[in-house]
Structure formats: structure tokens, C-alpha cells
Image (cartoon, helix red, strand yellow):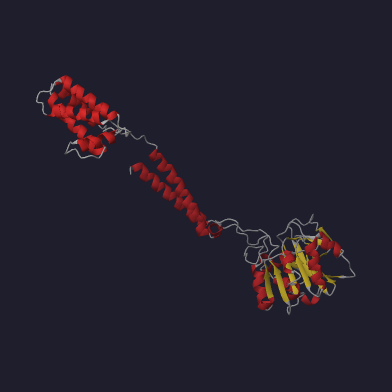
Length: 412
């Protein structure tokens, strides 16, 4: 590894360490997402609410529901569910069939409690209600004052809430059937009421049961409960829920409900694993850059050594032929032919007799007469000490012709 590569590696390591230190010491941004979920500790989660709820009510009476009301209140199981069905979210909308099933269940003597900034129009029409946005034209600081109407619950006359751009209220109610639980109003800088009080929490009888509607779901969030004495306001709202009955909390209509769609959820949830994942990606990127740069250098092509055995053999043969050593070439040619018979035709050449001639002719696709003629020539030349050039050429022609008739077409 050269000096430049070492410098690159050191600089890369320093940059990664610097990024980790900066991110670790950077103040974490507050997440104001309105999740209303039980497991969220962010300002608009409901972790604190559920923790306190288990202290105020019997834990056995608190039931968490992950399915939609349409399935929960199925005809087969509806008779087993009695008490309060509690909905908490920024927006709760039911379709007609689901709402009818909820209202039917409520009319049998149960309580339907909905805390949401937006409620189904079908439900509002059923209860003769209308909603509207509270005008905060003069409320530049977006500070709202909250009040419980039951004087027995008022340890503090007014409760404040600041983190809201707009809030809903009931603009029209059926005063003959509706009981007002709480109101809300704008507040000026000097904490004086600048507008009339608006109704935002009501209770209405429905059949043998009752419906509680709250247009201020923020009352159950971590931020609101932990702010000043606002927990008393939340406790006052809960006083309208019967603690002797079961409380069914809906976790289906939740903006922050658990929905792990990606397998990387585990990495992104934990800060340490998330940064380990980022560092791995950065390391892979640097590896591709530097390793790719190294592999881009030209590599010389090394040609393999040639097999020159054939050329060498031809050279030696030419030397013998041009030197007039016809007898030696003839002996080599005969031995070469006998080797061909042993290897390709699988015959023993130690004994040359009629049986051998017959088998050879059969296997080589030649006649017995041609085979006898060839071996007579071989026998004659084997016993001759002075072989002419013409005799050598004639032997070579006879052997090649004999081999060419072989149906295997095998050559050495």
C-alpha cells in the first residue's frame, strides 16, 4: 500500500469519526407529529395518559384493541363487550355500517367516547350537532383557555394550551339532550378572555347508553398532561367514564399506530443501529471508489507458451529425410504404425500371423489381401539394410492409404 492510499484511509476514518461526534452531540429535534399512540413518548403521544390510567383504573378493566370496531362488535362477540369504547386520534371517521354497529352497541347501555378534532359527519347529523373552527384572528400567540363546566372538578378555573394553530368547537348542539362538559376560548397576551367560550366537550344520552364527544384530543397527550397543572383537566374529563366497567381503547384509528413496512425498521428505530447502517454504506462507497481505481490499471496480457512439439518433430524428420537416412525413417514409420494398431485397434502386434491379419482387416475396414500386401512390404523393408527414397515414399503412401480406410478416422 503506497503513501497516498494510507493518507486517504486516515482522512476517511477522521471524517467518519467527526460525523459521529457531531451527530451524537447535536440536539435532537422535537417530534410534534400527532400520533396519539400509547407507545409514543413524543409530545403528541399518549404514553403518560395510559401510564396514569392504569393507576386510576383497574388494570384488568383496560383492554387494548388493535382491530376496527366493525370486527370488534361482531354479532358473535358484541354481547361479551360492555363498558366504554374510547377513541383517541386527530381524525376519527367511520363508514355508515361501522357507525351503525357502534350506535347499536351504545344504545344497549354502553358508552361511546370519541376524542378527535374531526368527527364523522354521519355521527354529527345523528346527534344534531355542527362543528366549526375557533377564530383566532386576535389570538396572535395561539394561546387557548380551557375550562370544565362542573364546578366540583375545578381545582383551577382555567387551563391553558398553546401549541395549536386552530381548534374545533361545537357551533350547534341540541340543548335539550346535550350536556356541556368543557369549553374553550382564545386568550390575549395579558391572559384576558378576548372572545366568548366555545363548547368543545359534550355528553349526550343515546338509547340506554351515552356518547361523549371531545374536540380537544390534545388533552390526553404527553405535552398537555405534563404542562403545569393540566393533568387535573384530563382527570376531570375521565371522571365521566365509569371506572367499574371495562374501558376498550382503540388502537386501530391511530395516526401513529405501529406499521413496520420496511425490514430496515429495526435499524432506523435505534440511533446506534441507524448510524451503524450509515457508516456501513459510507464504507462500502469508499471501498468501491478506491478498489475500483486500483482495478482500472492496465494489466499486461501474458501470452501462454506455444506447444512446439509438432514443429520440433517435423524439423527432426526433415533432418533425417534430407540426410538420406531412409532406413532409420522406415523403422520409425513401421514402429509408429504398429503403435497405431495397438492403441486405436487394440490388437497385439507381437505375433503377425493369419489370425492377426484377419482381425486387423476386420477392424480397420480393409480387405485381407490389402492387409497381407502391406505387411509383406513391411516385412521386406524391415530386413533390408539399404532402403531407397522411392521405397520409403511407397511405404508411407501404403500406410496412409490403409489408415484412411479405418471407419474410426482416428489419427495419431
